Image 1: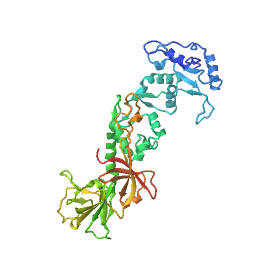
Image 2: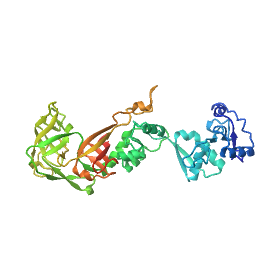
Image 3: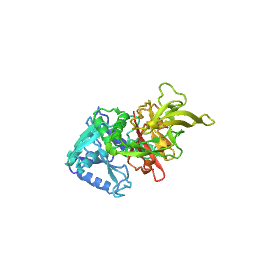
Image 4: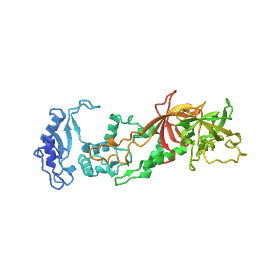
Length: 436
């Protein structure tokens, strides 16, 4: 390009170059160094590459059109001097190409046919095309589309890096991050992300996609593949007074009703169980159908129970719920015609495995974190309750849980095993709830 008079070395300062470009409505001012001969430019450029000039003293510019209404075509900078060690080439080079110059060449070298860019690169396309033509190289086609923006999160790599560096999150693979590694760690199946992308499609107008659509796609896919299991996140003891003290009954539970090939598992049923505290109310109203004093519910895969009385501590908190069970109402028994309005889940207290459960909410409190009032930044919109860590009691079968498997904690949501798990410590990440 230098030999053909399409590039020249400019000694102007950055401020002089910027001022010389002018504004889109008025032509720019040509650099006083624009008329250098190709021979002189070649010599100066070779000296730049050899490190004979200090940082910022010279640049290589393309000679295009200083009157173009597109500011990117007003003799853009191709190379600048920077004496800095590169992570791959060390100190071999002290000149570095600008993005617009390197973009088309990188695509060409890699054999790209269609270079897909976001809308802000639309005004860069004429320069992309000009460089490919001037260099006489394979010319990919640049196509622009609206970038994907999700509500209650950010997609800017610079801002995501700030979250990582300032330790607002656990790293690039934090399950709250909109990164592939973050989605994988949170338990989003690959197919759910593909389905989301196909549903959203490609647009030419910037908009914000509600993150609930991504969660819907995950929920739809997980419903097909997740193994069902029971876990209690906020436990309270349930004691079946008329069940034998040391008796253990094995009950059959379905692994996935959407997939008969997933088979069944056996769940131990004993005198003392854990149930969710939210499934019991001492005083209830007509809209509460779960367990109350004097009321009945079905224990999933098990029996109908009736609450007789409760134990409380000195502060008035319920410490144990006493019930009786009807042995003629085991799930699957044809002779039982009794009906109740609610079914709750449980785990055997004697066989349960304790696990750490990480419950995730929106990373930000507002739908568009980039929309800030004066004096605020997106950091001010971080949700302090986006991660809640609690303990849960899970089925004994989850002792053998393997990372990357998907689970549905029945009546709670979808979970996956986190990489922090080890032989004596199970850690689950909540992917999404059962409902929006």
